[in-house]
Length: 569
Image 1 (tube, rainbow, N blue to C red):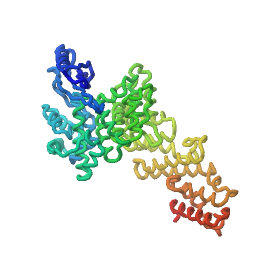
Image 2: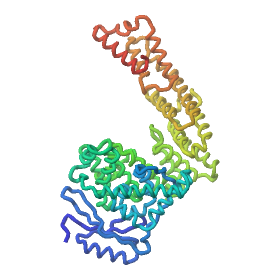
Image 3: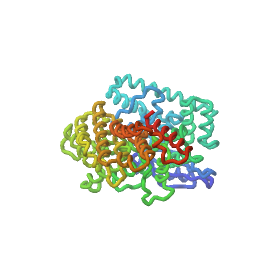
Image 4: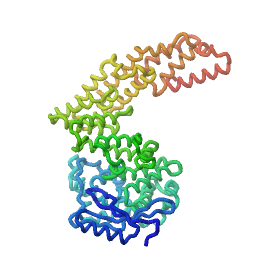
């Protein structure tokens, strides 16, 4: 009989993920029940997982039996509609884009085995198990080679040989790591101390690899996605929170878990529609998921906190990539009522808008256009042109509309429609007097200046051809100047009734790095500062309202420091 701290879960396989059926305290009873329900012919697969509660409260799950009906033993390679970035080194194979592709290609295997790409690539036993499945890895490599050859990465045969060579190197490296007896265990030291031990004697690349090996040794014992997520979340919170390189390692595995097919649904629970699920995933990626009646110990709430307060860049990327792929797919956003499909699309569209640009960047902007294209009868270039215009028109604010267009410009679809995007940007930014559509008159002038300056910087750094980028940045520059003149901000700051020191300091504040970035707007303010500096007896007038000599010296010293920061000296 098992100890009281252990139980045995019987899980059944449904389509592409495992679902808990029942739980037993005795292993023999669990195995007997599992074989009985499998022989009934109504389920595809069954497995028994031993759940052992450690003295420290952490649960460790070990698969002790797995069996599938004969008709479903074959694990097929899943479709892949986009070629992953070309891997030229073993390090590329460990990268997030490669692991995302593995999760998609091997989705059926990943779900059945409950194993992440990091575990497969770093745990020799798991890699051997995968390679032992006839034709699975060969088929996956072949599919990637064909897609990459179509994208111009050589011919299919040479690409396949290159990928097989990299895979052999990965296998050899995992095999060597498996024989090492000198790797510290996380359970004995904690993750950060383990990482620091490796860091003290290894190169950064080897340190990160072996840290993932150690992490994988723990994770392969957990045959449940949410158990893995719990464990990884605890590591992130360890000793007040991981940071820097150790956090990057753990972030990569959390990203792998979130890339598994069933995890997002299992994490969020039942959703009213695909649109609702996508909106919640976008919020989750940004660390802004509303609790919505969820309990404090809800795993989605915990992951949301991690994303809100830690730099989980790969996890965020994987979640948003899931949203992007669902948007590009064919599943309705609101299946229950086709008449609400556009309304559902609008909800998703508004959710990706942010001051920093479209959440998910250019790929998300492109996915939105391709989804909108389904609303139009016209196809080809005409349909895409209509979809671009409709998505832009559906964005409430002019600032966000510009951000959408410049994000889209950096995609393949955007390059195909560069002229259409250019015309839309010209219509939005071409008239300097049209600044009203970009500001909020209820806000202070300073806030509006920051808004326009931020947009100027985003355009100046946009993935547009040089000539167009310069032209649209100049448009925003002229608009900033027009707003400064209209709002009389310089006159207010340089009020003749105030002491010269206050006037000069306020003007210098506008010239400080990050306040005004556009050339014409900055020149306008700088000329006013220079006029002050050139007046006779400037230093005397600057401090004449200060009675104390020491205060005058300190004030002048501080003023010249600010001048230096603003680029005047």
